[in-house]
Image (tube, rainbow, N blue to C red; front, side, top):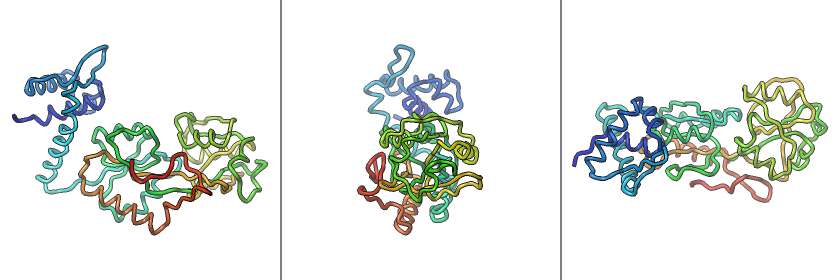
Length: 309
């Protein structure tokens, strides 16, 4: 039995989206064309791969069994085309969490990881979708549960976080602060807090009840809003350089020190040769620069630090 890769690819995208219209959009074909490809594949296999009910689609038992080898078939076909053309394409790496400047870390390893093409995702869900669609090979940012079962992540860096305050804030003169000292202040976040997992968990853990959201128009605009109000604060990794704004101060947090976890994320089964190089470069730099130091007696993480999930 000879499989048509275009039909298999249509099945994989539809299985990932569970929506024929969205799947067709990712392939730049019409929904009708996608439906025909899947119907021909089902005819060839002699079994239904999807069950259509209630305006949606679901995988049948046969579809669930077929999905993993189907993904491998598509990946192998893409690798075969690249080999025939005699060139390896660059590793496509998206980053997210832009307010916290993820490129600072990625830039320190990029030169040792082969040819990279960086891109920009909005957030973890959008980057996850790009990985599952095969639009990118890897991603770099803060990973938090729940995470798709077909994805793997490796912890790269644990970065201490400072409190950023107006110089008129009552605590601005302190040389260091405990997180609990911020309970009387307003946590200023660059967007809805329920979409910013690290800030949300910090507020819950340390009893920060007063919270307000801004619009993410970049670091300078966001910190300018913090500088203008003596009751506000936000959090920023300690190594992120502060913009030259009047009335702004960064104060280290201690007892415990919050750590922001940066991770690499990729889809299981991705065999791009540059992926191993990027993982190895990150591990090497983490060892040299002591990026993964963690002491539970003095540090705080929303989740325990693990290298893989």
